[in-house]
Length: 204
Image (cartoon, rainbow, N blue to C red):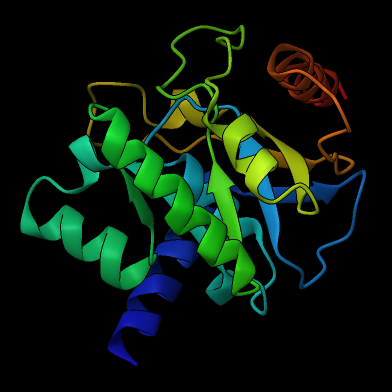
C-alpha cells in the first residue's frame, strides 16, 4: 500500500514537473505484454514513460535498468526493486547479461511489459546512438511480442547528466506503431528497422 502511494507520488511529480503529454500515434494503450523501446538521455526516462501510461497498465510494466547504477546504495535499490519492480541488467558481465535476457523473457511470459533503452547508455546529443544487440536477442526469444517505439521529447534538458536537481520543462511522449521480428531478418536489419522507426517518430 505504501509502495503504491510512493509510486503514485513519483508519477504525480513527474507529470507536474514536465506537463507531460502522451500521444498514442501508431497504437493504443492495450493491456498486452509488449516491449516499449525508447531513446535514452536521462535517468528519468523510464519514470516519464511509466507516468505516461494509463493507471491500469502501470503495475504490469517494468523498466529494464543498469545494475551498475540502480543497485548502488539502499535508496536506489529500494526504488528500482520495490517501487518500480525493475529488471536489473549487469552490463559489465556478458554471462549475467544473458541471464537477464531470460528474466525479461519470463516477465513477458507472465503478461507484463518491459521498458528498454537499446542505446545502452544515455545519449548526450541529438542523434541516436547505435542500438545494442540485446533487444534482438530478446526478440528472437519471444518473436511474437510487439516492440513499440517510444520517443521522449526534452527529458534530457530536465535533468542532464551530472545534475541532481530537475528543471521544470515541458516534455512529451509519442508511441509509434508496433513492430515484430521478421522471419530470416538479420540482427543488423532488425536493429536498423527499429532505429528508423524511432527516428521517424521523433520527427512527428
